[in-house]
Amino acid sequence: MTNTLFLKFRIDLENYNIDRSPKGPLTHRWMPNGESDSINLNVGNSDYILRVWFERHGISDGMIEFDYKEKKVDPTIIPRQGILEIGPLYCLLEIKDVSDDELNAVKDNKIGDSNYLTLGKRVISVIQPPISSFLRILRIQYGQYWLRELFPFDSRFHSLGSYCASLRLQWSIDKTNWSEFEPDQQVIRMTSNIMRDHASYSNYINEEDWNEIKAKIKTEYSPSYVMILLIQAWEHYDQKNTKYAILDGVTALELAIDELLRSALEKMNIKFTKIDEFNTTQSLPVKTMLVTGLKGNIKSEEIEDTLETIKIRNNIVHEGKNPPEDAGKRLKGLINTVSKMMENREFRFPKVNHGNALQDVVVWEKLKAEYLTSKK
Image (cartoon, rainbow, N blue to C red; front, top):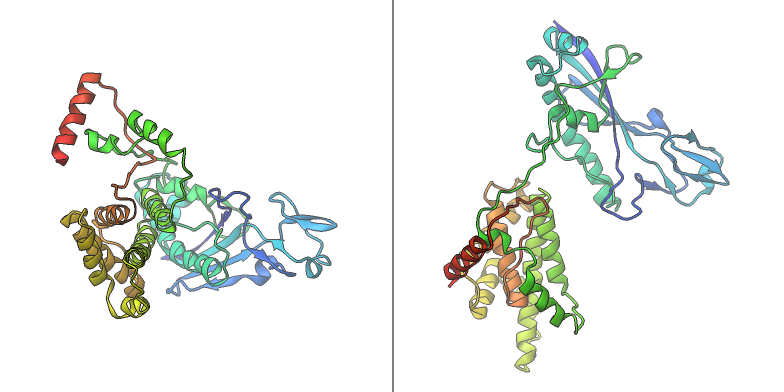
């Protein structure tokens, strides 16, 4: 026998990485009016119905101001106000094929039970893709870039119960009485990379670097847009957003090649008026091999990684594929390639979540010496 179960949840869209980020989408002289303006998302299965909407959060004091706790919006002000903030996304999922075992596990609050976990994983797999697609429409087609995305569940970083709790997931069989939906215990897993050699630690600022910074600070450092993109690519990768990291990294490569070709021709007093034609007729891999060969300071394996990253980017853009498992290694090779193109130095790859160690000074110096010898 199958049963119907309702799950309601809320997705906070405020992006805490952006200073003064809006709490949600911004609208003009209009606010969606709760469930009456809901949208049915395409789940691809008739056993599931997923609706999303925005509530009218705010208080009215001359103008409407957003407020998480209040819903005292004066509707007469809405058509007169230029910009309105509409806050978090509310969602309701109806599941029509819940088994007796699954329903009993939920009703009896059997946290950690296999049936509860199976249902929980099914719920997350159903809601995440269509909601992500909906948010991408708002972010990209309507320019609301500040909206926080809903990323897939990843057991490396938190338990299923923790993921559900972040969505304030609640269940009901009558849409009147609601209880917490908690498939297993709420656990957030802190991950870090264990570093055992000097190569990993060399990515962080040391005393020699500080002395170099002292000298550099005497002249204003104005990074190129290429280097800004590289840092952005590394940030995306370090924060587990490999797809965006690759897109930014390959864009940086394209800009770096164009900049280097123009700069080289200017130094030779050659007016190459057909450089745009050259860019359109030659593929990016061909231009990459040409420029890296002329630079002469880039390792063959880094060039290979760069060419492979271009292929991965093309698969993402043109075929909608996800990056393969070795994409991170390939991306680091590309980043190093571009860094050597632009600043004639290897890129630093510090991780925000890192391992640590306490060792005798003699051991540190020995590791350093071995590392420097291996690079010769």
